[in-house]
Each structure stands twice: as C-alpha cells, then as structure tokens.
Length: 123
Image 1 (cartoon, helix red, strand yellow):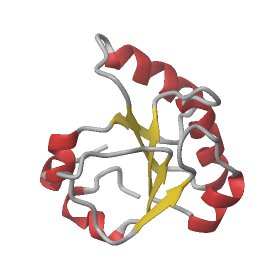
Image 2: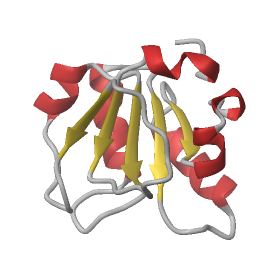
Image 3: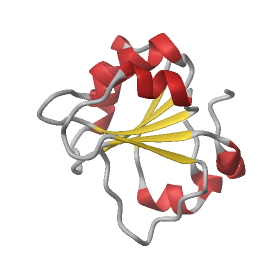
Image 4: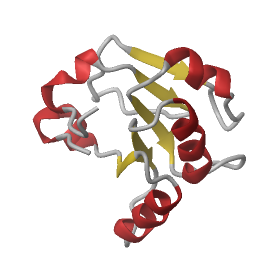
C-alpha cells in the first residue's frame, strides 16, 4: 500500500474493530465487522480478512491501539490503522508513541470529515 487511500477506498478491505459510527458517514461495500462492544478480537479475524485499513478504538477496557497495531503488523504490515476516540489535546504525541511501537503501520486518527471526502484521506 502506498500510504494514500484517496478515491480508491472502495477497492480496499476495511475491518472495523468494536467501533460505532454516525449514520451520516459513508461506507463502501467492502467493510468487515469484528466484535461488538469491548469483547476483544482474535487474530483469526485479521488473518481471514487481510484488511488494508483497520478502524479501531484508541482504547477499550481490554485492549488499546498498540495492542491492535502489534497484531496487525504480524498479519498485514503496511496496513492503515485509523483510531477512533475522544478529541485529544495532543494527538501527535499519542500517534508518535503508537508509531514507535508499530513502525510498519501507517497510523492516524479517524476523521469524519476526511472520511466523507476521501480526496482528503491520506495516511
């Protein structure tokens, strides 16, 4: 993956891990859902789907973005990990920590505006 999704998001496999979204967000037909709530997830879900993009909560009661990132790196290095969570006062600091632990991934904060205008969505 070249790190840029741009208009080709419809050609990518997207895995949602325990995430919920506003109905106004547009999603292509290539979405795979894994685990509802904070029940965790398994390597088999990631291995089976082989996603190009994983959208995950920044943290849950059972795992956080670094846990997800390390698991994704084992199965689909160079995937894009988009993190959904509360508004952060210093998102760059958190992204830097996650990227330090998961250097083979493209990591970013999920942004509703960029998602609906995919020409703005880049890793």
